[in-house]
Image 1 (tube, rainbow, N blue to C red):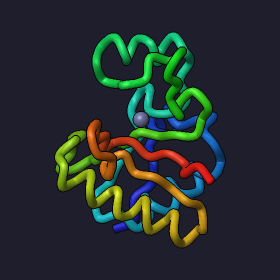
Image 2 (cartoon, rainbow, N blue to C red; image 1 turned 120 degrees about the vertical axis):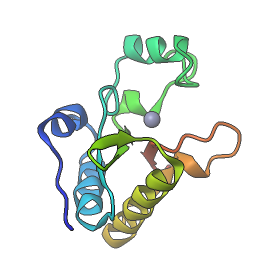
Image 3 (cartoon, rainbow, N blue to C red; image 1 turned 180 degrees about the horizontal axis):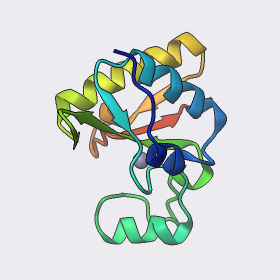
Image 4 (cartoon, rainbow, N blue to C red; image 1 turned 60 degrees about the vertical axis):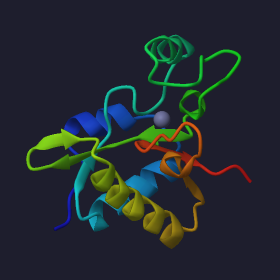
Length: 130
Ligand SMILES: [Zn+2]
């Protein structure tokens, strides 16, 4: 049960920090659930960030509060279960376990938005600040 990313996920993650690519590639090998990277799940322009903020799906407006997506240091994922995209908490938690295990194996500190208090952002992963 080793998955790999499809064409759309590869396109959507293009340009993100190579450390995140390494983590994603390892995580998708070991994850129990398949997963992918949605549109806007990788690098974002300030304009895209503002649009997502206006839609209420992101807390960062792109200017006064910048998202890690704007510096290519974040990635969003969705689980892919039974032939469809899933944002189910349990599915995302399993994917997160794979992402965090991959980060640990590779020695690249990663932060999962699912552990944030306040605005819990389960699809979101970012490189940890040192
Ligand atoms: Zn995100």
